Amino acid sequence: MFKVRLIPTEEIHTILPLVKITNPDLPEEVLRERLEQMLPLGYQCVGVYDDDRLIAISGIWVLVKFYVGKHIEPDNVVVHPDYRSKGVGELMMNWIFDYARSIGCVASELNAYVTNYRGHKFWFNQGYKVLGFHFQKLL
Image (cartoon, one colour):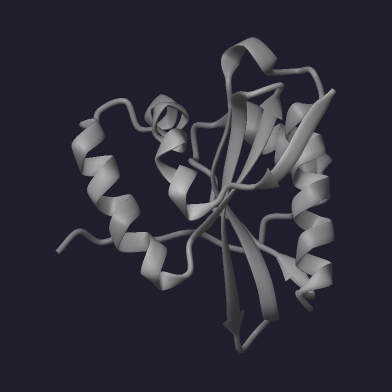
């Protein structure tokens, strides 16, 4: 039986091997530094465990924007390859949606890489719809 919970700050670095899966070109020390910078900004992370093994993660940001109000943003959603297509992602997202409702969120929004077709299918199946484009400019 899988268990879903918020990962306490003192255990937060346990997410780095899973984060590395979707960020293979970034050295772990860079990921660690960025994680340390994100924590004071409100970053939290949800984990799914198979016994004591962390098998899936989703960062979460709680934000308020004019056009949508208070919402939750799943970020860096990763399921270990050994556990994909076994309902782990849906279990985690349902936990996140329940948590979001419990803290007064009215919506969930996220970003997905354009080339992540499998991810797109998952997000559509979770009830998300495409509203626009995510733009980036490196400075």
